[in-house]
Image (cartoon, rainbow over all chains, first blue to last red; front, side, top):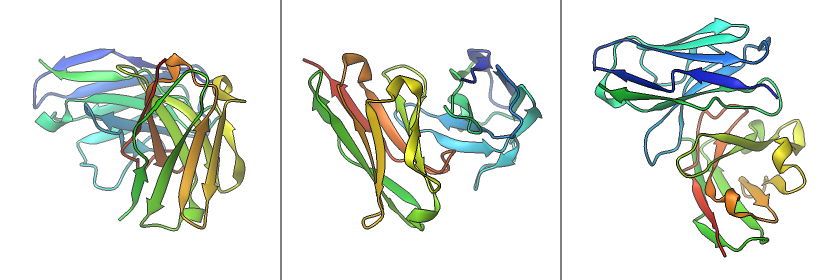
Length: 108
Length: 115
């Protein structure tokens, strides 16, 4: 099973600041099949990024994904008030399709 | 528009089974798989399994194998997840999502297991 480790656990930032979230895989994701989701309290997760760097429909361009092999990054260039939430990475190239434990982005 | 609408909350006793439904609309159901994910209270996301176009018998996380079955009914565009021999630590919100990664999600179904 591929283990995804997200860091940091919590990120305290102010609106307008840049957020950099990390997701490290226990083995190389040669298929490039990594996604990022945003989840707000009481809501289902919503897809932000798939295939490492492709934005889902309707996702603003302040969200970007990058990386390869075992190291992946979600960057939010300028935090908007609605971006404070929990973010999860997921690999979907291998069974089981594992999630990271999440990074909470909170208002400083 | 694509929608996944799940069945309502369930309360079950330990050892019982639960079957959660996920009705799809707004797209051709047979061209996408359905993934099931759960989230225990205050915890992260956990992949349960999925049924795909080319994986009709489903793939499952090892910890659920033998206790879970995911199926589809193409006559009603509905997917199902049945979990048997429920334990208290199966208490969670269960989500269905479209595809191998979830580009659309259901609203979630709370399953509470309590004696």
